[in-house]
Image (cartoon, rainbow over the protein chains, first blue to last red):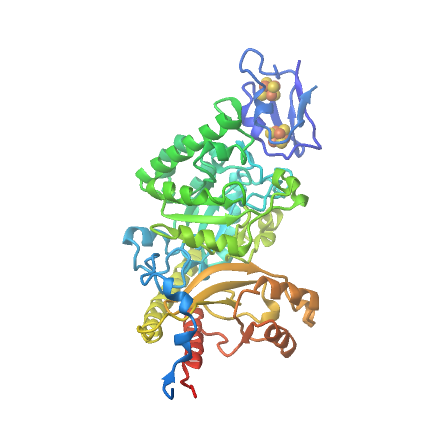
Length: 64
Length: 500
Ligand code: SF4
Ligand code: SF4
């Protein structure tokens, strides 16, 4: 259970990174990536995945 | 009848409705904000006098730079698409390069060493400065340490502002810009599809209500903390154009000292919601009418260039491309002390020049404006386009102008009303007819265009279109030249006419 970032859609703004409660998101080789080991889809923490809620681009963060 | 009647007694009767006292309180100045200590409290004047974005006079002399260390945003606006550069709010969408606080500080040092005119460094994006508070504040701290004489400023949509006013105050950020497009959430719904706040995404009326409350709270808190607040509004015809007078009233009451109403820039190619729905921007005339209407107790700013979050240099002349990360890294470390000395010397020189200017201008105003006959209706004011690259002088060749500043000059003086961007007529030495048409359209409402020099051929075209090309004031001061032009024009129409 994890999400992933669609590289071609991502504007590299980093808004998702600072909102992730599990530090699952990091900047690697020119883009942001989600570590599936750490991503919980925010289950039990928030109503909505924080990265998705904060991302400006629709369909940029999708189920892995 | 045999008596002598000045022609202007007959002409210009329509001007009878013009109020005798200019409501701006800066009657005869060429100002967007205010361009002199007159009419502005000293404390405010001292804060704005060197800020090119806040003082219309300062923008002729001082440079600013933006460092785009804040890529993330916390709201979605219908005039912005983060995948593309946003033309409206100093928001390049995808910044061409990521800029860390350390890199930003290096860049500021490099620019400061090369440009003694540098007075202000701001953070305006590319997203929202306060949606990235740690990056933003870290950057300010570094700059404050290395170049303490440079002023810091920040732009925000206001959503996160109430949480950060104390920190802004601590860092001595004395200029702040909030973009407020509405004070009625029903109108906000048409501008903001959603916001991210308190770990949730909010939509519709809830989103706009929250945003509005946070903006006003932030504005009031910042004003109470003694921070100078400017409000930016994007004018969107059919959505908030009639509402902005109300916005103007409310932000003025809340203590904003300057209101900058900017035109929506909308193009389908930008991929924004408004671009795709065909929402148009206002015409220069619509914009000016609204600015005129709002110009009461609060200064309305007219010289804004809607510059990018990574702009560097004098307004209207972006040097950003010269200072990329790699270019900065490759530069020799600047001599900070020498650079600061150069800035101080430049400022002293400019202050002396500005003092001289003010004196000179007061004399010309007294001579020309003061000489206006009081017994007859005022001469109708006219618009005049001016080619300038700063220094408050007419100093650009017609063929080299990238933009024209437009002034309204009349019996009450001259004032700056806006700028018109144009394509350069003389690329590589030969004039281009298509471009000339574009220029004629851009300044079509002007009676004259003042330039440092102009060729015969474009002169003729301009004359044919009713725009008088004028190069006899080359390198003269703008306001004095405008007033002289107007006085001569008035004298010409005042020439006694014998009526048979
Ligand atoms: S918020 Fe969206 S666009 Fe921004 S870095 Fe994360 S995935 Fe990319
Ligand atoms: S869904 Fe939640 S846990 Fe997973 S990356 Fe996004 S913010 Fe982090």
